[in-house]
Image 1 (cartoon, rainbow, N blue to C red):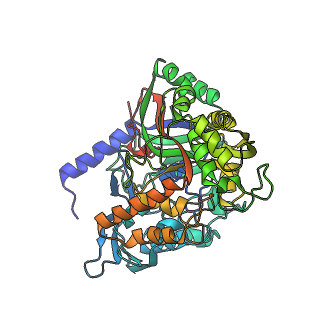
Image 2 (cartoon, rainbow, N blue to C red; image 1 turned 30 degrees about the vertical axis):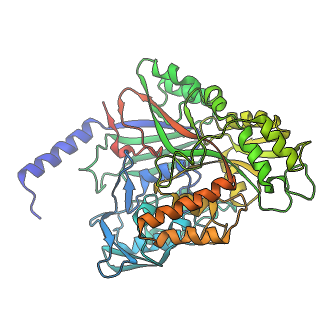
Length: 526
């Protein structure tokens, strides 16, 4: 293809602009990515770092809209509705210079379906991934899947040759404590290359000069220095002093201080995430409570009592300084299947809660351990402390055990916690994502984050059927039926919809992404 003079001029101006704005962005947040293995942990900060280095076939931009990434076009096959066809971007190279093609996509999707992958639920309906030619991928499902592209926005593509050469074909067993080459190294197609990685200390990224999107994105940021700073006061001090330029989690108590500081700004938006508590209601006895030979959480009356003991408005006002939206369901309002009726917040009612406890045979109460992260969600440990006091009002003595997310999350995956905090975002914007991970019986392909031990075969069948139901009216009706069971069973204790507060130097221009993923290739710098 011959380039015209205007195109050459535009390219020259783009490269001149890039050079003029060459600048380092110093980025901090409470916790680090758990791993660089792109399929080992489906966790927000982990995906956020991966998005700088690696790319999926399709992605969500800073507004939440789905846009092309390594695929330029996609749709169901004209001859077979059970096949999704993706046309791949040509001329793309990995950071080491290797050519990107369909074999890399097939390898990556097959890898993401293996047992140690934390993304397998998103591909549970996939029967086969085919690479009929160099730039075409066919995903065959066990029925027409209307939302397959939605499931791929965080499904990162690895270089097959790099993985084979570095013994990284197998997904890292994160919960099992495995350390691998892919956990600390990466070779992607993204806008930024990995320069160095010190987990929980510092990660340095540099601009990919050969990035396919260099004429499509701002790319004002040419170096990223990412520093996890768990302590909230230290994190804010680093922003105020100019040590860092951008933090994703301004503590609510410091919002005014940061917003009013010279040279700084705070931008706020609702997040596609709900914070909630999970309960082991399936085991006959609990390991972390004071009741011998029985499971108090198995009694719905106890779960109901716990639900109405939580004063969500008090948490909003006192703990969150108004920066949260009390929730009645574990789906954000962004998501298909959310309704105001399901999300109605239960009234706090201590007297009824005590009566429910007595009716269940626990009038004298019991004690239980609550496992909570202290570096993942906004005021996570403080929320758990507030809940501890609220549970005491109905006779439940809560022993709080707060620890970093790297130690907290495996407790849920390996079923070693009976009562725990979790937050859930929904990158697909569809309830099926919630059901696949949090409601379906825990097994090989579903339920990896279902620490409740809840299991319902009829509900499982309905959840699995969502992937192949193309009648959207019927599909939505099934989603509502599943939510009704989740709500009736008090499967989880919703706390609130999280609100995002990004703090940054005035020179940084961006909007807040609803998934809390800062895609730095979109950022502009004054």
